[in-house]
Length: 227
Image 1 (cartoon, rainbow, N blue to C red):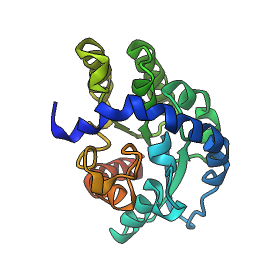
Image 2: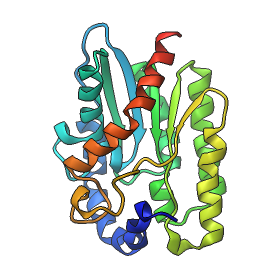
Image 3: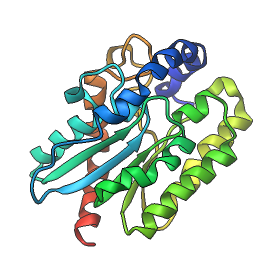
């Protein structure tokens, strides 16, 4: 496994400390970022995710959705990004609140979920079923989707890692799904791009994520324009 994911070796031990903080801010995060200001006539892009989307530990302006929206607008694209990230959320949580997230009637969606499933050692089969249900629902609604993958903590063993990592490969191969294999590519394991907890990207780390994923998101929005 590449050095990009070395940081996950420490995630299990750090997770206990992080979880207590997450519980205190999860509900607040849900409402704090749920009502973006949308430009008239702009495409609406939903980001359904966990703390990596919500912007844990960062001002709203430095969160992934905010930085992505700015980058898209700098590319001349009129896109309003909806931050539907909830810190500590799992694939099951994302599925449970999907109806709520779709109330904004997005034109496209990015699904960034699964990191907490891996940290908790949840059954990859159930996580895959949850993600599949999310993708199915988005397809039913005619919403193009980009699936952002994650990698399993190596300390959970090779068998678990194979099942966990494989679910993204299988789901990403679905017809009509744009697949970005590793959301933290270029950021994981780099102390200079992460907050003190070693788990969450800092402002600079988010900027790297945005730069790397931007071509895939632009492709997604192009598909949405053709709908």
